[in-house]
Length: 125
Image (cartoon, rainbow, N blue to C red):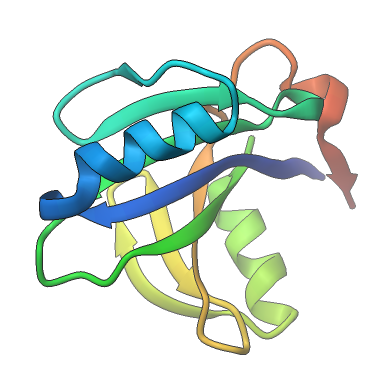
């Protein structure tokens, strides 16, 4: 048994457009961009406790939006979504990058949103 949920929606932009795009999405959501480090900035928290964040990518990466599925068991969640049709792109230390059947990138990550995870997660058996 494990639990998971969509925990973060990431707005990915190349470094060259990251600042302008982050400012745009913060303003569009009625929020203020709050840098966390060189790569991530918090934009706002959406209903259900889902975080909206901006992620700085290299300039050779196309702008996109991707989801992070957070879970209390990364291996079990990867196996579950692979059985549903996902493809593993890269298995990194602590998390896994995948694509859905249509090629959309998403990640399976450990719990990162905090105390409300249990309230909003789905339990899989």
